[in-house]
Length: 520
Image (cartoon, rainbow, N blue to C red; front, side):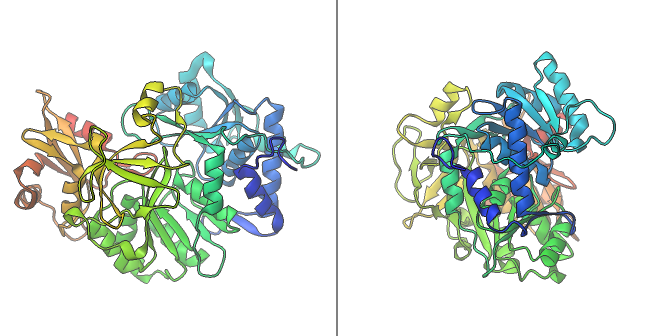
């Protein structure tokens, strides 16, 4: 049925693809588990949309999603967006108090809860007190509970599957995606339907002849959800894992003939280090996309050697969607300090490198990366001052990233503007120290961050995961940095850890590392 607004958003596009071959399997849960056909997903979305609209969910309303990776949360998102509501992802792993502040800030009208997260949901609701939204669960609670009615049961009770028309308009927000910040409350990025729909329909999902098969092993609330949408729009299928486990990922690639993976760099390193990797059949892999935080050039070179010409680097952000892409042939250390490029601007994207006064800088000079494209956000949710700083009014987005362009338009990232460590004598970009430490044979992974002392001066600190079979000596690592970068860059402290803690979206959690250093 045609949308009453004559605008067909991304849910309608996905539903049209699903309707073409209802018997085709489109979703599989981990380890060869339950399968969902295209027809079943299509009908579930329409049934959920009917139930949600019956509860007053539509344009101008916010639906919160608190769930791990499961088919029902995908259907719920599509249904809420089909009904015209915006969605907000509440990451499993965030503190309940933080989740409650996010839910309150976006005026959540309905909270949809994974039954496995009932304890988190109750803690969230407790923090909201009398301002708590309506709640429905995505299936029965494991024990008698009182969170709210079961959305799946309500869908099953419908006498027939209705055809719910899309209600969203092009400029409506399909979601408010909160940035993966590691301090404070993340900013709510407003993402409109029209550019997201255009991006999905034009997304390249290269696969060797067959429809793509994507393994979602990171949260659907982050980029894995976007790539799931793109896979389904391309007529492909998705394998859902609840969390990242390198051994399970490798087993799934071989067993399920996975063609596409998305990994943040820390997870790519864990895959490289897994003992099962050498014996795993990787012949089905067409594309491993990585991004989301800085990547070590030495580790990327190793990944290109091991996996072959399937690595695609992606630079993007919630505020601008995907900005650049580095293709397999770009994985050579040609940038400043031996960096590997994050690629060239995608079609429709314009890049500029500017100084603190907003002046364009020539090729080769470092400055803040500015982006202009149709994918740039409408603004931050109800934060006009932050919006004005990020969007100065000239059509450009200030990314907060430090980078440089070469003569061929390749972008090289140096660091985040806000991640600069201001030490006595100058400024230290953590990525520079991380890149160097990753070349040391005793270092498997590391994170570099600033710690303020009693007099408010900052020091460089490093957390290091020793490489298997190696003994990492903090003094030797400090001397290694001093000899190659100078005493300014040398970590005042090197702490050996079993693993680098990650934020709920999989980025190194430097706030937690900083807190540990403060307690030491």
